[in-house]
Image 1 (cartoon, rainbow, N blue to C red):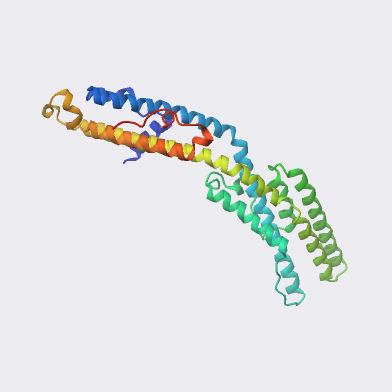
Image 2 (cartoon, helix red, strand yellow):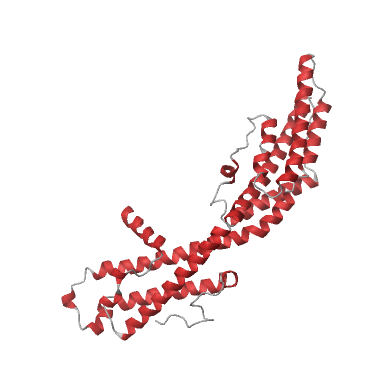
Length: 320
């Protein structure tokens, strides 16, 4: 398939049209059998279009929830990253003091990290990170090359789009104040041409870690459990609808491409044209795809979006 073909196919998918007027199968065969199958397929097309409109409307309504999910992932990532950074600061402090010590995380610290990874994995598993990069949303990237004070301040950005921002901002402000005191202590020691007592630095960092553990990562996880499945389900439904559009449009386009190559002089009567033209097989393939999608919808989306118009609860499956 050429780039032009791909572009044309995508335009048809975006237009939500399976059977445009120029692809009227009755021009090939108008027998009762084919007419009945075409009628059912057109009903499927109308139902499918209606279903996608409803899904797209829901996605539009859920856009704030989507942004909230990404913001939650970004905030938990920043919390985890800053905790790692503070631990590295402690390790550097021990190295400078000549102490040989392997730092182990406390139980509460490990729980915070575990929850943060659960949030990230939830977003990845539901393919929401493929939708929007949380780093791009935050506008900030974590780096040890930047001053610790800068990284702490970036927390306002990371938590800014969550509903916990007010509580988080209070904690971040306290962490920031401790860092300012720490920097002032370093500056005073430098002016007095002496080394800052390592215990002072350790106290500052320990206090920052204690505050960091109070950030609402657990609440972030609770919100993710609430919003992520709902948002991901709507996006997956839209993707599945586009997929059935694409598959059925390809089947229809292949038929017309082959049909145009057939020498009509070799055809028999109109009643038999569905056989020699390949229309009968094409309609069967399209019906199979329609039925397959109906089964998928009934299984995965019926209880969330309402029954599909062509589901077994309303009508029988497409006849072959």
